[in-house]
Structure formats: structure tokens, C-alpha cells
Length: 418
Image (cartoon, rainbow, N blue to C red):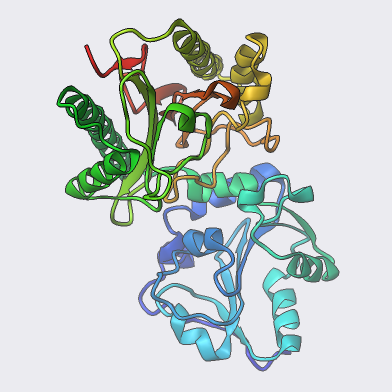
């Protein structure tokens, strides 16, 4: 027997039936999902911060100083159990109960064996063949170690959706506020461009970008990366970001694309993320209008598909939504110009850990479940024409209905100079 048996650390923090406070809100739905998938448990593992999913699921505060590997096993029934290094056990006080400590690598291995007990099918942050990079957080060696204990390791992809990606009511409210703020900031940015053009002082892409960042601060929003403000041929680069070195002035008779994302500060903040396009002349060229209409049809087809499936009570998979939008663009002759997935999950990071609308970069076969927020953002990019259009909206699945949280939809190109 290990000299470091299970002990209780969570002083005054263990809830009803021994469930840790950090898992109390989500433990029931995790265990329900484990039963649905026929799994014996979920083995959450981290070392040196490589697995932010595990950190968030267990409620690990950001201020904890951890330099050793730890594991938390959530069984299909009963209370979670922990394995942590002896010199760091105090870092888990107030978070964990039923804690086993280890010191040596031999004790780590035996501790894992004891932690897993009779479990034979467990989930970890692993995707077979690396098919879902966003959830492939556990190194191959650790997966091999767990398998060597006679345990089958399967993907936690859908567990992550119910435990970490699904929004709480507080998160949904925070997202809606962030979405309203971003829609207003977008309008202010376009108004700034129009005013400067009418006054004969064209702004640069970087100036508009800085204006957006200033407005985000005014609205108490934070963002991990600065927004995209692209003019002319820069719109044909899906991830163009202006800098002082590459910025261009926004002059008349040019397409302008603005993509901005942000969330509220605090534990409930989740991202909103939108993209709109405008033109700096009264008459928009027919070619630009045509590409806009194709992208809009792809967006609307994807949203209609989701609504119809929800109304039928039928399952929806991420790759299917992507394929619906992609088919519209393919049939218009621009398959080569739609070079990214149709949408991504939204969460504490702008690219969250839920299902993506993707049948291009990956084939995301995860189901779109209630409580998930995501983007729909088809695009066509034609570098040879110096033209790119993307239309991005945010959506949320509420039971059997779809809520578009970034209304109104863009139905025509914004004209910035009458």
C-alpha cells in the first residue's frame, strides 16, 4: 500500500453526499453523460498548465502555484477522487476531498491505479488521430501510462461540452450584454470611418482598430487579441490584423471588413464575436454585391438548417452545419475560396471548447447540444481580385430553439458615404 493514502482536504467545502463544491453545479450532468456514453469515469489530468479544460472543470483558481502533475477522477457514481504531489497538497485545500498524495514516480503510477480502482473505460482530453486539436490536451505518454493499467482511454469531447462549454444562465446574460456592446461599437466604428471620409481625413486601419479597443474599454470589455480592420485587398486575408507597419488608409470606393470579439471581465464572461462589411461609396460594385449575396445565403442556410433540426428534435452535428453552408458556396463556384470552417464554439476563450461548425479543418462529429454558444461565419476570399467578404453572427441553442444573439443580421452592405 502507498504510504500516502486518501485523505480529506476540503475543510468545510464538501457539499451534500460528499460532492466537492468545485463540481457541485456540474457533477450531476457529468455523471449523466458518463452513463449515456457507457464510461466508468472521467480522468482529468494536468501538468504545468497544459490542460486548461481540466483546470476549469475542477474549478482550480488561477492563483494556485502548481509545478507537479495532478489528477482528478470523476466516477460515474460517487464522489471525485484526487491524486496530487505531497508538496502541493495544500494548494488543493478548499477544492478537493478524497485526496491521495504521491512523491515518487512509482507512487504516481500506483496512485493512478488506486485512483481508477475498478474503472476500465475512462475519458481523457484525447482525440483519436488528433482529429480535434482543441480538446487534445493530454500528452501521448500519459495516455499510454493509463492504458498500461488495463484501462481503455476514450475521448472526453462530449463531456467537455456538458461540463465546460455549456453556458450557465449568468454566462448567457453576460454574452448577450457583450454582444449588444459589440454591435454598438461596430456601428460607431463605421460611423467614424464615414465621418472622417466626408471631412477629407481618411482614417487608417490601425486608427479604427484603436478606436474599437478604446470603446471596448469604455464598455468594460476585454479581448485576447486586437480586432481585424481590413480595407481593399486586405479583406481577402481572413486573419489580416493591421499594425503600424502594414496599415493602409481607408479611402473612398473600397470594401471595409471589421471583425471584433470581446467578453465581460469576471468569471461569467464569455465571448461575443461578429463580422460586418461596408463600402466607402454610394454605389457598391455589382461584383461585391454578388459575393456578399452568396455569403449571406450560406449563412442563412446554415441557420435555417439548425432551426429545422431543432424543431424536429433531431440531432445536429457540427460537420453537418458546415457542409450546409459550404454547399451553397460550392454550388456558386467558390469552394476554393472558402478556406476556413463555418463557425466555432464560444466560451471563456473566443474559440471555445464546444463543437465547431467544421467539415473542413476537422470533421467535427460532436453534437450541438442545448446550452452551447457558437458562431456562424461563412466567407469568400479572392486575393486575385483583392476582395474578401465574411459575415459572422453568434447563436445559442436554448432547448429546441435557436437564439441569434447578435441581431440584426446584416442583410446588405453598409454604405459609408451617401
